[in-house]
Length: 234
Image (cartoon, rainbow, N blue to C red; front, side, top):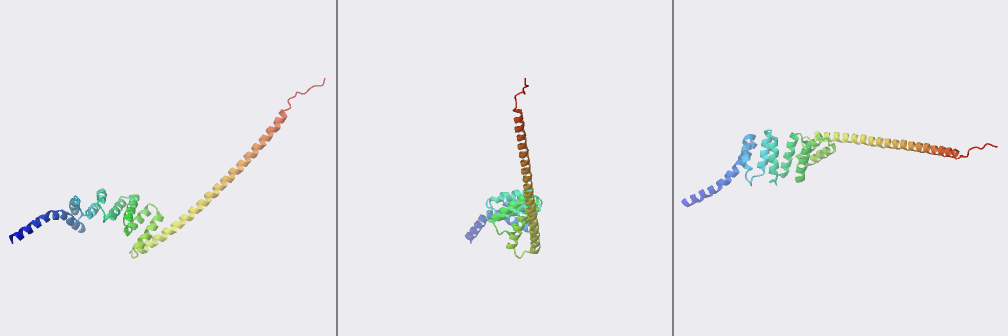
């Protein structure tokens, strides 16, 4: 019996370091889910110090910072964790995109959503958020295409009707833009043709004037060619 107790005690002693390492992440995750970002952050900061830390620790910690308004810290955390990410790599890029949106850096956000989709093309939320960001940068064709892709991945989306209406408006606006662009291009070509015709006319007039001047000069030369002085009859 004493031997069995000794073996059990030794086993527990061996497990204590592992439990101590796992505890900060587990408790931090629990506090994060209980909407206690400040308390969760202190534990998750310890959790990411472990070389074999669960990559979700970086994601949770970044979200804790984000909830506290510490956007730069959240972004730095995601960048550091990205190097260790594998299973949730797309989410690292996605969350960085969300932070850039909050910072008003839509172009950077679009790039991050694109990176997320390169890793996981089924991440529908990335299409939706990128579409919204593209609207802000006036990339209307890109926004339309992203909204379409989002709806293809999420056919039962609650906001489907409003997105479809937005797509219709975008298509109508794009059609009008194309019409105006075509008219502008046609006018540009017509103006260029008219300008060239004017230049051609001016060139012809100048050439004609030059020819006339040459003829007059030739005639004057002929007159000037009579160099003999008149003789008086003796």
